[in-house]
Length: 57
Image (cartoon, rainbow, N blue to C red; front, side):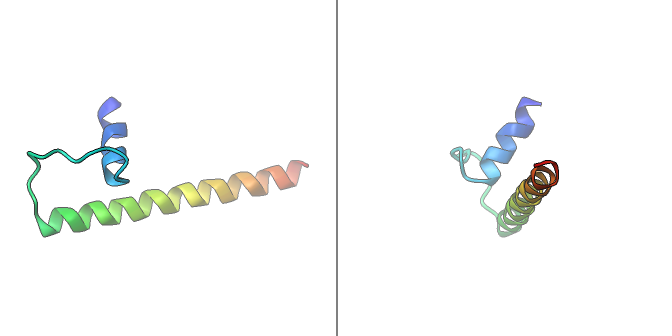
């Protein structure tokens, strides 16, 4: 489980990249797509929480 959180931090550039990691355009594009999907998921969760709180308040 720890490695999953480390990978998410790398996708979001909150943690330094591994200097040993290969530099490849395909890997860069994959990480960019993952970053976008994680951010969209977090935005959707926040929207759902706001709607849920509005419903109960």
